[in-house]
Image (tube, rainbow, N blue to C red):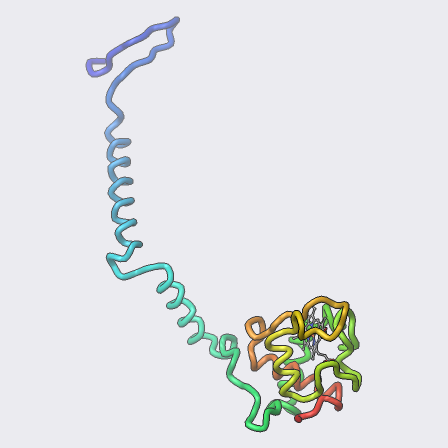
Length: 182
Ligand code: HEC
């Protein structure tokens, strides 16, 4: 025990001072070096940062699944009408979006719960594609609200995007002939 200096000896319990094992010291140094390199790396020496990394991942995803991310591919046509009216595929997709995003408030069959019945001929805000598109995309809040009850209607411009909103409206138009193009 040449490099180990005994400092106390209480009833066979020793406390000593000596050098840390070499392997431990090397790991400490390696950890510090890694930390410095890592900080320099993530703070831009290599031109990489979190935001760019995120954008890159989103871009890759969009390339891989163009359908899924292309939320705003379709919008109202020049006459302000829903171009997906009568499109069987759109109607089917629209019904499933309705079930996941609208049914909680408007009922599975669209006949209304806290939100009004969307299958009858009574429209609080108007019965044209243009009006309904605006309502569903931007929601109905504050002064716009016509009902005393029911709370706000949330916007769906992000959660669905214009294409899916128009699919829902294609389904609504099939369910409710009083929803007109104009
Ligand atoms: C959190 C509940 C909620 C959700 C979810 C919701 N709505 Fe509504 N919606 C309402 C309420 C409440 C109103 C009535 C607002 C008012 O007071 O004018 C309304 C009104 C409407 C109107 C106007 C009806 C009229 O008579 O003019 C349409 C159209 C509509 N919603 C469609 C949808 C569609 C389509 C979805 C799904 C994409 C949806 N809503 C999701 C609560 C909701």
